[in-house]
Length: 239
Image (cartoon, rainbow, N blue to C red; front, side, top):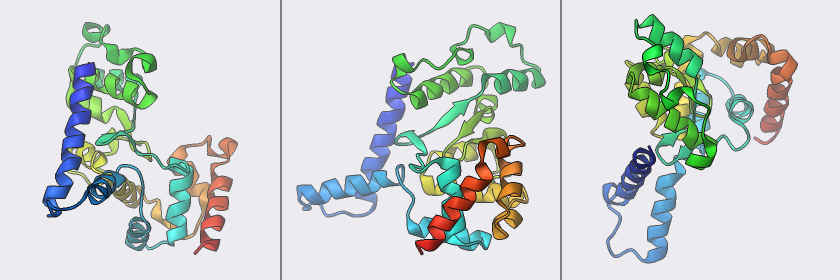
């Protein structure tokens, strides 16, 4: 398993390294310039830009402050979308996986000892994000599509089973786009809002309705609606 995870990280690093070649960076560039290219190529995994916010806000017909507020509350102030370059944060739900296996006519008892059904082993894998990814990799050995659909992905923790609502043609496309950048994670979230009729609540800043349909009935006890309103007011003042 460690070898699989290592290969994934190395593949992401190699992909990132290809940035310089694909963007025709001069081979005569000095060391500081090379470092800048490396940082820029990895930035897509670590931060959203104002252009990203503006693009999605215009797409949905809402204020940029509205999108920033949702990102801040739903994804956290750090809005971290990746456990490592090319490896999006996930929460693998073993209960959902077991239920989906049953619906597909596959026996859980045959795979009950698979590590996918164990708790995340943070000590072994170094972080919660990588431990969850290890569970997903194990689940994929049983059924990759069902495993991918049974995890919650990226900054917004969108269930893989919602790939159609995110405008994707398959769960594989959903996973590939989630793995591409934080900007793609934001775009998938925007598509989810469109196809779940949530944009109307963002336009009117009806935070209670948005929180109810996105977070469920427990939103009020967790104060999601008031947090969204406070975040919106903060970002609208910073325009």
